[in-house]
Length: 57
Image (cartoon, rainbow, N blue to C red):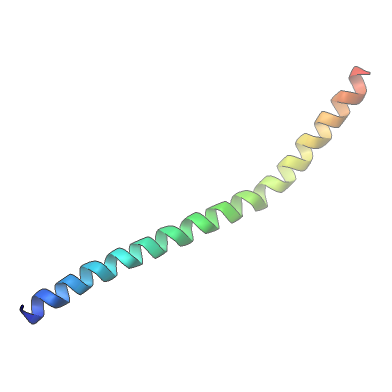
């Protein structure tokens, strides 16, 4: 085995691991952002549903 071949292989594996880590972090931050932004929307929709329930009675 050549030293250059080994370092190329390590760079490929290292790059793949870094790509996987970046994707994992992006998915986690996207989910957190969705929960953060979704809370006020959910509260607003719950308020609208309660108001409509009162009007129907």
